[in-house]
Length: 191
Image 1 (cartoon, one colour):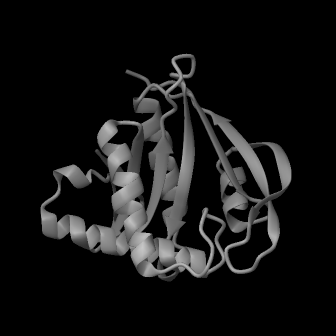
Image 2 (tube, helix red, strand yellow):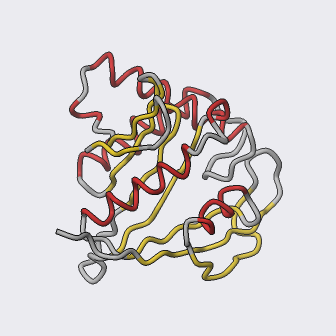
C-alpha cells in the first residue's frame, strides 16, 4: 500500500519485508536500524537506553518487528527518500475481540538528517489512512511529555488523556521521565 507524502522525492509505503528481495530487505533493515540507533543516541524515549549498539537496533527489526508483521498484528509504514528509508511508524493492532476498532501508534521515528521536512507529519497522516482502511476509528499512543513528538501529535488533533510521572528511563541518562498518553478518534473510511 502506497501513500502520498506531499514532500518532493519522499514516498510512503507499507513495509512488507516478507515480500522483498533479500538484498532490499537487508538494506531496509540497515536503514531502519540506523534510524532507531540514531534516535536512541539522540535522546528519544523509544524503549531503549544507551549503551545501545547498531546490531541491537537491527535485531529489533528482524527479531521483534518482522515476526509480528508476518502474524498480522502489526503494520509498519516507511518513508523513502530517493529509495532509502528515512522514517517509520508502526500500527499495533490489539488482539482482544472487544477492540476491533482500536489500534496503537508506536515507534514514530525520523532519521535526524531528515527531520524538520514534514516527514513525521506525513507518516502520521498515512498511518491514519491505513488505520481507517483497516476499520480502526480510535488510535492511542504515548510519548515523552513536552517533546517535539507530543507537539506534533497535538497539532494533528490527538487529545491528551493524562501524564504518568516517572514512566520510563531516559535513553541517555539513568533518570525517569514522564509520558503523555493521547488518543484520536478517526472518521470511518468512506467507500
